[in-house]
Image 1 (cartoon, rainbow, N blue to C red):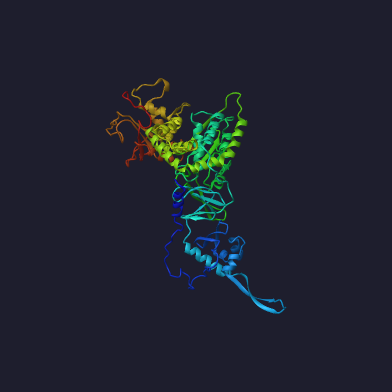
Image 2: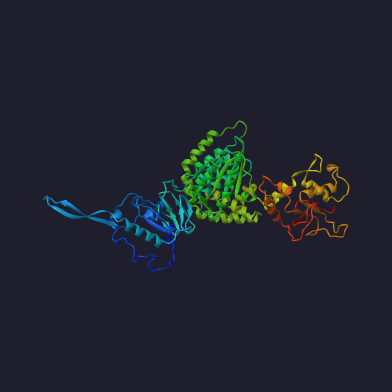
Length: 616
């Protein structure tokens, strides 16, 4: 893409949010008349009005910071001077307050002269309030951008460097507004440098490959791809997250430091408390590195982080509202790529696995010590990080083409949709950092082959989804068999009832069918064999499909307690049970054991993993 195209796209951006005002022609002012207007001969007001809402007025102050003032504060001299950064030159020139002052001329004669002694506070307040009313109601449509990499109106990356904003090929001062995005001022932050060549990207890739021992082939490619995606902040549609795991001595923290050194603009966190995470990550569209993400006894912070990542990886990221000590709600926003390191990852559910790429590190070979080389590579990364960042930004168009190419190739290889987003983004990032071209079909196959061990197919995804994990937990639970001290798993009891013979099996002897049926009944589970049609009294056995199946009570306390201290506690297990493909919840009531007939959930034995064959 040419710089002229970028320039045209930015110049065509909508510069103001249009609000259709209704009501009285005078804007609702009971006194009538217009507020004081700034004389045209003066310089434009250095303060930008953004809008108003519920008695609060929103501005960008003289240096471009977001300021929120109440109506009383707008009429306060001290607050007005703070809004104008202590410089009242424009205020005096535009709304002068004059007074007759007596002075003496050269001859010593007393004269009266009119001088500007201050500014008219009430006039300034009326003017600023009217400007906010003209801007319209302030709301979530106005996005206040903090430092980081954000998407422009045309999708191109915009790099907010605190005191300056790189929009296309222009460097604007902070406080600029493009469309509904306001690039608020902040302390200066690092800037990308002139793009490096592919040699620097390959050097970093080779260093990572040589100095760390990856259990899964292609780990170094995944690491470089994650770094490249992190450079793009919120400007890419899918932002993959990574988890570096490994035992003591594997160098996971050293690798995280190298990636951190290669990222001039980043957030580093080693506090996994929920409040700490939100405070550090809020509104910063930049790489986030988190050490010791799940190495503490209290895993709540790690789980809170995983939940934040769920929505931060796609779309507009995580958006929420938190209450403050003063009772005023504040908005939070978490967006961008996150790379973490810990000995073991926290307990992940299927939705987490689709957004994290887990990179497992093994210890170095016996007698090998790469500590010094790790430090040297981190130093090199710090020196070349700005240029590597510049390379990623300059390769934005190549990234988009590479992403489409890799996603198509992954689809043809049987990869699942979410995996296509995750691995496609990582491969596109790796390609942009190491190549100057776009990948062809052969290049796409080379990349997929290098990360083949990271690709999860349909079977992998199915075995890791929540319903399957819930069933696996239930089937492995050990329960007491009648009054003996013997304990059997739920799966053993179900298998005993599904056996075709009426005798006893040596490995579970002396467990009889009647005992298995009684114990399962206590837990609200009833097994229906495929050949059971009618009972002795002529009543048909309850079933919702041909073949073997099971009924689960929806209100059995003993069954619910089996899921205590798990992600399926309470009624969550029942929700996941109903998500199974063969699950049915008929309105009729079913009797299980000695319990009163009640509504239950039916699931086929085959879907629960029981091999019901011809011998049943």
